[in-house]
Length: 374
Image 1 (cartoon, helix red, strand yellow):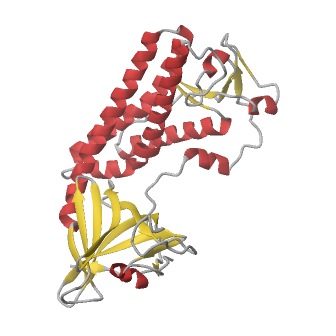
Image 2: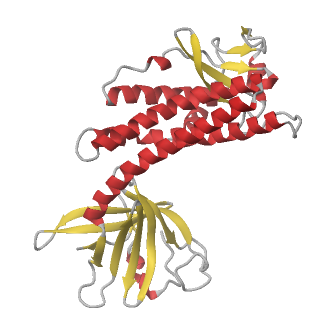
Image 3: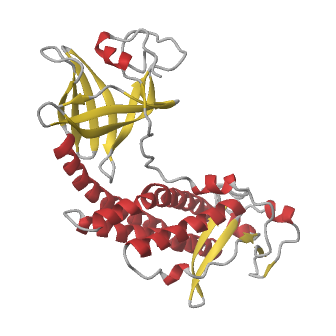
């Protein structure tokens, strides 16, 4: 519950705000794959796990302990007998979770867009412990065994591996979780064309996450700057194309949300002159909700419009159990940022319906301010 001591008069509204929600606002993030893997630890590495040496030969690890100490794990993807991509991680649990996330995306994409499953995902190898030292350089987003720090090839590999790790995280953690919303928006209406373009760009990016990992692994063997630079350029181009496709769709969704929700709302509890207002402004995909009472005003909510049209962001709250340093509504006075949403609803009123907005925030549990409406 928000602390109400030493709060400025303009924020007196929050004194009666904190109302528990019988239903927590819908989560909008995809659970992290590595977290899911850690929740169910693997007791044994299993008979399907392999070890690969620099000459390409593979065998079963001598002991579970030897496999547990492996610094780099990979899964190769093949089609028609040719390896076209690699998924790599620093642990068996992580590489297995990554494989399942990719396969999950491929299955969902095929089902939601009424397509056959992409055959490129049909032949993954078992998890492989890569013991070849040459492949370990920068395996963990730019970290690897000691070497010549001035070697330009090694430095270039470290840099591009780091870029690829960021690209992979952006694709799988930010864009891929949106697939259901993308498919919904592609199903018809004014967003269909842009949603289909976004889905196509996302599918290509997931493929490139694995394809470019293989290219970097080969570049570590070939030790040619041109190969590394080509991979670097490919990452930049794919990331740019994905961001542009996402932005184009989000702008259309945000405009529709702004048409419906932007504007001034009055405090339902106080009528007449001097009543507090909450003004919701949407600029592009950015959202700002400002509390206004008389001459005083404060930014109550900062966030963005999501693909489902929800307004998600943050708000300042008084920390529980901590005295504020001053009466101002600011970080300097001791307020802290908390996850927040603006939630809208049409509610029955004496004359028709009222369009209502509530500020929800998370502080131990989800609570909300009393509604404003128009």
